[in-house]
Amino acid sequence: MVSPFGTSLDAFRDALLDGQSAVAPIERFDTTGCASKLAASVAGFEPTAWVAPMKLRRMDPTGAYAIAASGMAIADARQPLHEDGDEAGGIVLGTWSAGGQAMQEYLSALLRSGPGGVPALIFNTTVGNAAASQVGLEFKLRGLNTTITHKEASGLAAIVSAVEFLRQERASWLVTGGVDSFYEMFFKAHDRFAVMSRRSTFSKGMGPFDRDRCGFIMGEGCFALCVERVDDARRRHATPYGDILGVAASGAAVPTNAWPDRAEPLARTMGLALGDAGLTPDDVDVVYASANATPQLDAVEAAALAELFGGGRTVITSIKGALGECGASGAASCAAALLCGRARRVPPIAGLGHVDPALKALRFATESVVAPGPIALVNSFASGGALFSLVLRVAA
Amino acid sequence: MPELLEDEIKQAIVRSLRLPISAEEIGISTPLFGEGLGLDSIDVLELVLELERSFGVSITEEQLGKKVMHSVETIAAFITAERQKTPM
Image (tube, rainbow over all chains, first blue to last red; front, side, top):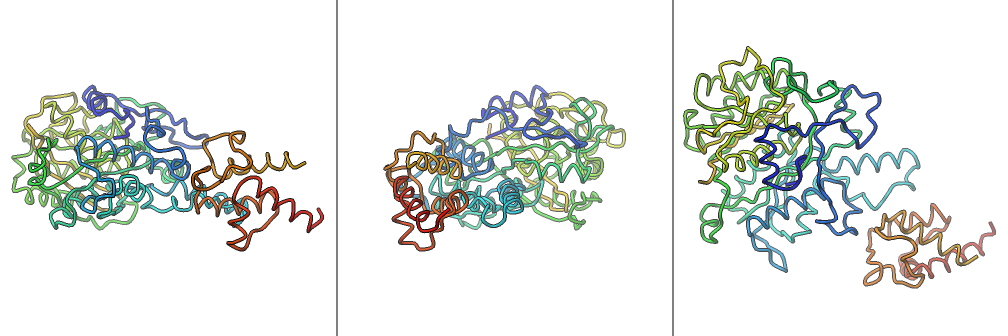
């Protein structure tokens, strides 16, 4: 992974379990005039450690993040790479922002200097599937190469899709997950939409499900997993982090920039994933919620969670107070569920001071607690209404 | 001053192609492509545009481009020849 807590899986897990937040004032560009000035930025990442300098000059950060995180995931899975490429291996990557940063630069040059002034060098990077394509080229993955974009839910949408591709035997193994890197135009557009928190420093009260929550904080990074069918993993004596038991995709049918406005579609999506896994709500030990401190999303998701888990033992957490919101968030939640789950812990919701009284039917992780068991439900719900849920079992 | 022109070309190459090296590291006869500097066909597109932007010369034929783009030295010779055709 390439995360705001660095590239180490252990450091990522420990920071989450410690209740840390990577949210800080933005240093990447000038935020003068912006009402929002905070983000969770990638830290501790040196791209030249992963990508040759001659290749880096034609990439935006999502390409470098994706190559680095995919390379780490492939190595960790001990998935053998063949010198002449692998037709059975591929990538399904979710992203909200890939290509945007290069497009910003390209269009700025066009408007400033006309057609003769555009940087031809980065033209190939202005498309949304650039990062996945660059991963395919780097590791000679000649199987399926797909990019999926569903705004904030892109990362989990990709993992859900990868699972379906494996079920259809369209590939033997896949790198999957999400990648995003915020850039000036992207951030400032969201600032104009007034959807992000406007507080100047991160503190209690800004976390998901808090009574004083006031909008999300932008995040970024790349979280990659290697997925394969259980039989294939056993055959090559792999040691998986866990099993994906069920997945679901659904829709809330709301306007493009609106958050889901009713609990029913969200509860239905979670129910479909549990049904796909052959489980019931009583079987779920931990939920990694999509809640990101947006008043409406958190309230609607909490209502949906209350329908399934209200008054029960299931612990509800969200990593968005620690890492912010982005198109890689659902993949980050899967990584957190697997890594913290292996430590038999649940991370607290960073920034959660006072639980919204309207949401009290649920058992929120206000501090790091022992995981009641290995079954986790991961949600990722996008503005615009794309809904994804996934059920996994952490390896013993 | 031929040396100055060659220095300008090196700087233009490094700047426009965002090369991770300094202009001084490029030899005037070092091949720009393949085993030399390692540039490729996408770099050619950018370099053609850069020569138009910075030196006012156009390369419109592929065969001519292959000859001109061989090295800093051949680019300098081309620019000098073009300037002699069109008094500045």
